[in-house]
Image 1: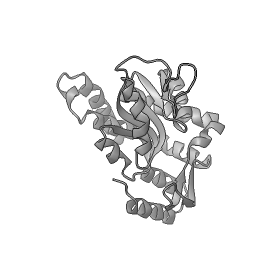
Image 2: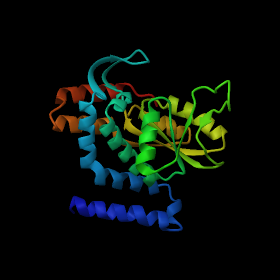
Image 3: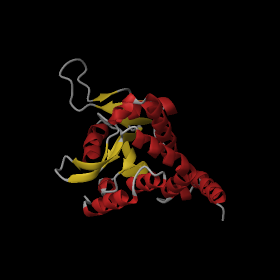
Image 4: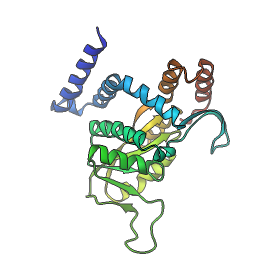
Length: 242
């Protein structure tokens, strides 16, 4: 069967299941959404991976991580603020995914998730809020900036996930404020078990891509040697957090 036909079928399923009174309650609904989205946007995402690499958001070499471990790959999307066209493109991709997931508001996690949240909000016309890292000791002393209502469904936005701890910490004040949080959307999943840790805490992880997909795309484009892909893959397998 041709790929285009497979995509058409999956997109139809993606549209039909949510509207069905019984099927919409089944857990595999979002699984179909993810598969359909990845197939439909695979080529575009490969181009985006290459742009992110060229912008220095994905680096290969030897990098000391916060844990003290030496990693052959380092991903840092904070520099996107200096590349407005690329930040806009990332925001558009995140907004498209956010609309598929469904939410009343998005919440950018300080600090890397804030510009991503703004870009997503503007691209998709989705209201944004964000939890502060610390409450102000003056003025309103708010822990959450932006307007919202009790039981609004909030989609958390961030750049990357390793072990998921910062995501769970950032979600706490949102839930304490009466908001409903069940999903987290990021640019890149390092595939080190963060999705499982979030799942154990009751949250579902969504990502524009996985590190293995980025590696494959960069090898095909000739930007990364196959040997480096193998080195990174072995590192990821040996350093799991779940």
